[in-house]
Image (cartoon, rainbow, N blue to C red; front, side):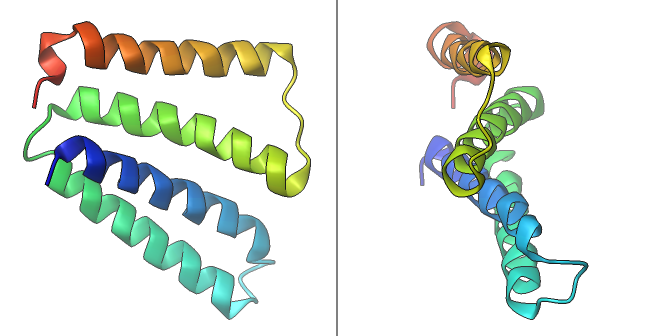
Length: 110
């Protein structure tokens, strides 16, 4: 499987897990706890698979950057956490950085 597809799935797992933490309520809610554990486990298994093909620095930069953007956007939708102008600028820079890595860096070649 294409490592970038696995990486995107890992990012989705991370975003789901982090968002589910909002519903854990002092670790008293079993379903959100299960979602957190399973989603993080799948995310890290995906990272393990990706690291067989891509450099660790490139992998982490993409995973963390897209995870940050995804979490901010999900927070906007689910929790009405509205980013300010600098947060939007930061997300734009993150996405731009990921694009530069993937389009122009020879390090990112799978």
